[in-house]
Image (cartoon, rainbow, N blue to C red; front, side, top):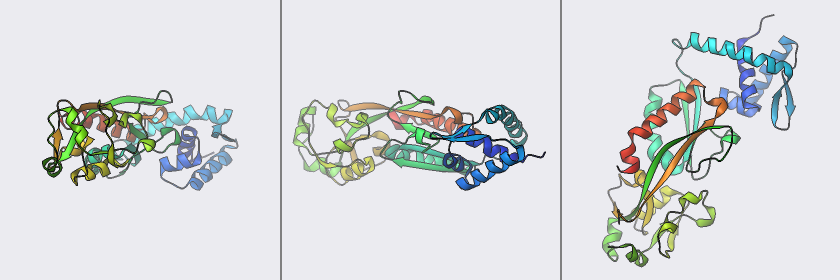
Length: 294
């Protein structure tokens, strides 16, 4: 009996991913291809490897017995193939919109040039990307999950400061102390659409302030501030290279948040995931001056 290694590889991915859709995304094929491979393997072996449950594809007792044997083959294959075959496949990274666009995009673009066989998907959006739904392989979040099958690390702290455009500050009352802020307009989040309470920075000031321009896009907020709409609390990594912006009350208004990085336990040893994970950790350490202004 001759068993195709590719069939076994599809079997192992489905055993870990639980659904055809997730397995197909990890391998980079259509879900129907995964189904055909599993059917072919079951036909060759003459046994049923999976049973369909409400939660997805669950292994039968025969399937469970096969997993460690195929994992051993996988490790041997990786060791043999490593010097000859560059890392390939896809790594999908979910991140907050501002961090993904203003910080990660350039770094990941440079990184990808060294690994042309590796596809990087960057998803920078103003919402929480859910690992549990397999929306990404690595997620960077400002909220630390309380539980789940995750590997979690603190990626970095980052600072936020109060900014206004130079034109706006010249045309409006001078700001010498926090109380002077009551004479000014503000740009902020739409409070009933904010996806994390950690984003309520303006509310931390001991004043009753009302925003005249609101958006749940931090990049839209920065553009509005640059255009003179008012003042806003922005991450330093977004505002630092905007010559039209100026820090306001830099000593008195200075907040810090934390970025957490997480992946699923069953992905942590995937070579391509580990490569990107280690790269992001290293870059966060290198870029502390940008993130924290230290």
